[in-house]
Image (cartoon, rainbow, N blue to C red):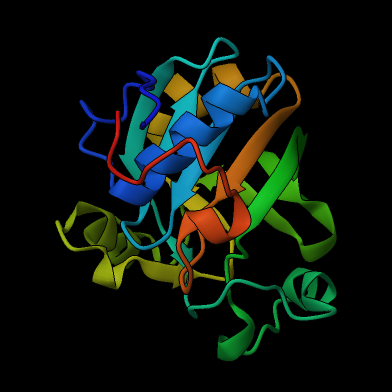
Length: 196
């Protein structure tokens, strides 16, 4: 018998994989009363939840330019130097304890893998901004692979949702894998991929 939990993800038209993980987090109490987020790499979407597990908002995101579920050794140092080979520009899958912080330029970010220099941050005002805005606006997730590995959100979404929840206290960021179902990383026999 499937367990039913209302995470708000059905109304957000989230993928079955994101809905499964949302239920898994809620039933396990895995976020331990902290705000948290689910990154759906296949759908190029971010879902942010408050400390009580209520969906606070969702947005299209940009992700690492290369598919893959692991970070290459030493990628954090190469990212700080601005020299990351295309094949190493991945957004790794997994569960990450997040911390609000600032990057080397003083920009507000949410670190989710400090050693790999990976963060959740707003779209930057740089030379690639126009192209990245276009990628965020298209309905297809296929062109949302454009970062060094960070999860990049529109400025308004960062300011209205990410900063108040994940930008002020520790949280948890869950990143769904590219190459495996969420049940492979977060198994639970009581959940089915379609029950909600």
